[in-house]
Image (cartoon, rainbow, N blue to C red; front, side, top):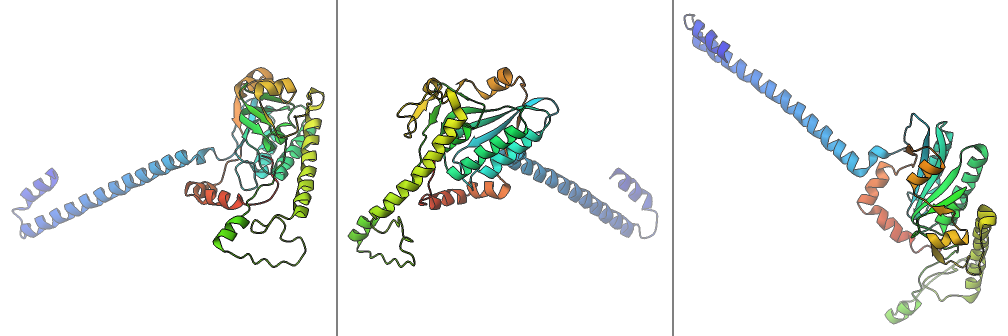
Length: 323
């Protein structure tokens, strides 16, 4: 502005100096507006980038995918929550993490950190089978299970494939059983005066329909079916635990035990946390997380209640599950 003022003072002797002065003032104002606009855009971009970073960090998207290590380390894969095809603890996600962990030449040992009440026997069985395959392919890399709060049913189905199982004395483990659950609405329908009209092609197509009376023949068939799955579960536990298992009449009835009692029964091997196993058992204190996280759309769905709605809709399913 000082230069403009000096220029105006020098121009007062020239013809049409008033016009030139106005033009210079106008151009100066335009330059100021341009500079102000550029700085405004710059700060808006900075604000947008900052808010984006905060959002990404808050939603946990920065941790999406396996970790990276430059030295020998202990690999960890989380199995959290219900084990199901569409859940965070699905076979696909867990197996992806396991393969990446075993493939890394710097992995000294793998730990499954389990905190799960159970879930699908199919998903748990696929993970169990893959653990066995990877242990055979990479015989020098041990795999351990570390139990947090609970490792029941399908969670224990997976843990049984580990070389050793470590628990806290207050952890809950076991629940070696299978169930099929649902609802029966026939009494409510009678009270409401609702008539059920079910048309099927196939004598047993309407088996276990919640709006029809329970057929004893269908109930007996369902019991035989989940009995077969229970036998598969028991076999997996016996093979995985071997001579360490101290079987009792109640062991395979679906009961759960504390971690301390589980050690006594041979369902677990000792007390220990993830840090303990990495430091004292595997001898590689650095821990790298190979868990495969949920994708952005899945996280958004759960944040806004779509995931909860899906769980509610699936809760009526009569598929057998380890729980």
